[in-house]
Length: 223
Image (cartoon, rainbow, N blue to C red; front, side, top):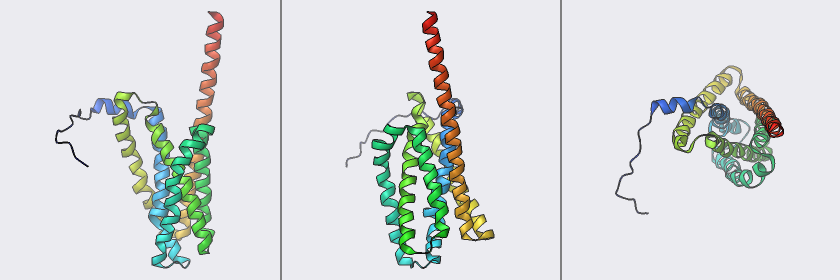
């Protein structure tokens, strides 16, 4: 791969433009959901899942299999989401299903004591989490003007970074006080919370669209 010698000229970050982008409701909604999603993944497979696996009998050398069972479906979910789920259900309904199933599989982890079932749940969990991130990424800039999308993407990444640190930190507090199982319960609650917000925002957006259609029909009749 040849790297071009000439440097690309890029405009510096405009704080005024950044402030305007940060106030975009759609970006704030998606960023909040992304905080919760990153809290889940960094508190589980990138956090305390390995420790729980060791507690139920996995050997350190077995942890590689956990990563395989999680990451392969996680990567494959991107294709499934873009080609099948979103075109058929839409973004909001796809997120409802993905967040709900993620929460369900997460809350099941503390009840699993066998290796086979544990790996199976990791596969399903990896798949459902893999459905969430591509949709949120697309939605973060979907309603942003083209000249502001780079700024919006930077803001989105900065906001969801909160979940990368805050999620494992809070889950770790629960783990130290109530045992490692409680951390998974906490993370599962985050997923159910995200599901509730998605349902609410989906219904609100659907209601607004209905009102706009009715107003358009009324204007057409008057004209």
